[in-house]
Image (cartoon, rainbow over all chains, first blue to last red; front, top):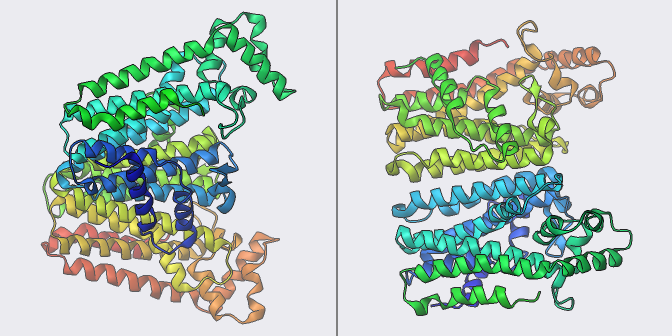
Length: 320
Length: 320
């Protein structure tokens, strides 16, 4: 079995070998650009990890892994337009470099490229692969829609928030796991368990992200600590505090920051008062437990599950 | 066999029966909206027409027909954003009603919906159906990219223009025909001939569109006659005149219209001087001949081809 690092290297080697047409250059150059910006390639690595539970030939899963990575990058291109984001992984976003119209269209053709990768899988698993991929892609779009709508709403519930991060983030991790399992030759039951593992891991990961934005190690944290507080982002911490705090305390959560440090400080104190970090950790652990339970039920030799247990541990341990 | 009108009715009945999720409503309501705006449903009708050459059970082809119509409407939603168009079929465009971000995302999910329709075809033809659809979708995106780029260029050749309209418009008609043939059970040779028929018909249709914009019957023509002239659109007529006219004559083609009637009049006279209508008609007939040749070669009883010959005649006869 490969280590996750080895699998990441396989993905990093495969991506530059994807052949796109040369013409029209402005349609395809943005795809090469965004696909080369790197990242941890966590989603395609998950595809390969899941496949390797059931097959020794992970090449079977490479096309699906590239489909998932291409789809993920497509969502980044379109999301960055919607969020008006200037930077992605420290570099100019596609719409900043090529303009919004070009970015819409290059994103569209990335969706086609994803489907081209998918269509190369063994005909025996093609139908379940398509069904899983389409359900995943649809969920991700729904999650992005909810995320945009929540920005304009003042009455988002915790349940709605969990459902949004499930769709926007976790469904793709679940889908990646399930697709890897299917092309690896898993039973439907095992493929569904890996979906559950990935989805619950994804929700836990996003909750940990919310926690680390406030309580992360500032020296290791790549972004400004308290960034979510400054932008009044409706995270789990924010929404939970809104639900628990007294009316006069709520202002500091939703007011525009005049002095950013003061605002971060004020809100963090409020979070501390209501033990929001602990409540968020309990919530996170709930989803990690669900992920672990799915993993335990998987009809696969226990020693093969180590990489997956390591993923759970990484979330528990990370401080940035 | 069904008449084209009957096939159109089948499509019109099937579209409102497509079930989309209800939530998030703002993601799916734009899809219901754009799909209900009507139009001639020419692409899905072509799918069914092509299928019926090879099977008596056109229900086999209905999912593909809906995939093609959904994909076509997806391109309309995104193209209208890029073109900043306020109206589509006399109604507000999706981005006018729901905003640009929502329109991008609803378009994205329409692409997923297209793929969901496709995935329902018989497993025996699933792979060639996907390959044909993906090649078609990719071509349409390339055509839109070229169209946008041509607006900013002053040296577009006739060959480049034909290639652009082939990709932007004709490939989808060819793809619709080929997909219908495949699900109907055609041989590869016949499916490819129907692709050629559809593609060449599409190029001819667009050239006729260019001609009718200037020479169409103003009483029947739904848009302003000379609209292409007023907006300096790089049509076949425009580009051919640029290639033939003397330097001092070119100004009227490319200048901004101060008086629209004067401009349309001036340019039309220039077109007449260089017999551009006749040259465009020769070019159009070239593609209609190719379409007819492909149809003649098709290994199908001649009387079954009547609906297809009628399509050719409709283009030759139309005056609006």
